[in-house]
Amino acid sequence: MVGDVDRQAHVQDYALAPSYFARKDNLFNVLFVKRGWAWITVSFFAFVLTHPSMKGNARVVRAGVRWGLVTVWWVFVTQWFLGRRLLIGV
View 1 (cartoon, rainbow, N blue to C red):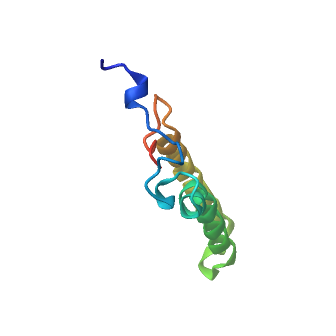
View 2: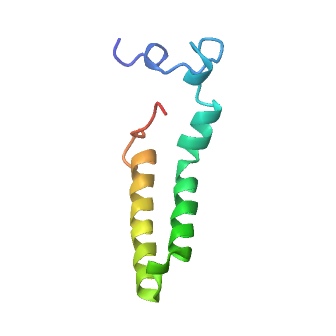
């Protein structure tokens, strides 16, 4: 049967995971995938606020707008507004 959810669902039983790294809650997955956008945001704003080439209000505003657009795209890809998330297995 095509719609059988039990046969098609991704099992997250930790006893059945082939290794620690296959689990969604492993340290590398949590720090670098699930919290990856926080790392990118912190490093981006550290660059914008400290780099000498970013002097001037217009450049900082333009960088902030770009970050905002990319953030919206990131939410779109990771949460998928129209159904299942694109990164469902991560």
